Image: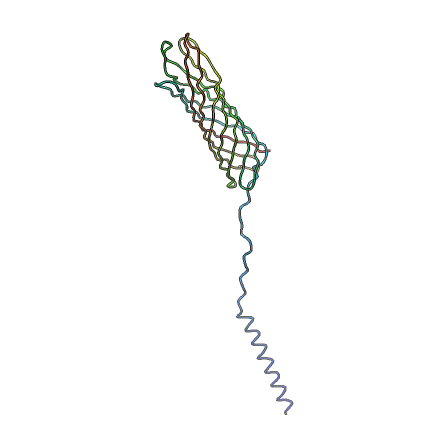
Length: 219
């Protein structure tokens, strides 16, 4: 009888202990995992050479006169350059060649009379610095510009190459892994040149505002 009581007591003790462990396992809530890393979008790959082309809308004026000097035109442009990238900073150099046939009044001057001015072929060599907002690149650009300017009046015409500076900003984005699209605004200011018209000398400069929309290929 005594041995039976001891066995029953031992069995009851084992059952109670097992039930307590089971209850702890049921009611113990698991700990949440500790976050060890934060996610950030990877930078795009802008490094390398590229070429492209697009359309332009130019609005300018021939300076050096107090009367009407508006000129505008729609044309085309080709461009090419090379980018380097350090983190989110993108920098490099670019050149472009454009034509818009931008023409309008260049004012008037005695004894020549009314003048017509045209900006023809123009181009620039510039530096570019931008910030990668993957897939967008926001950038600024500045450099030297050269354009062909022609004046007509007094039954004659004359043309000169004029140098100047150009500054602007734009936004570019990846369309595919190596195709990009961009919108860019630029302001260009060209030096005054002396044109020989009707036996007289006429001095004119040129200021230009240009909006350029293009697509390029990155190699």
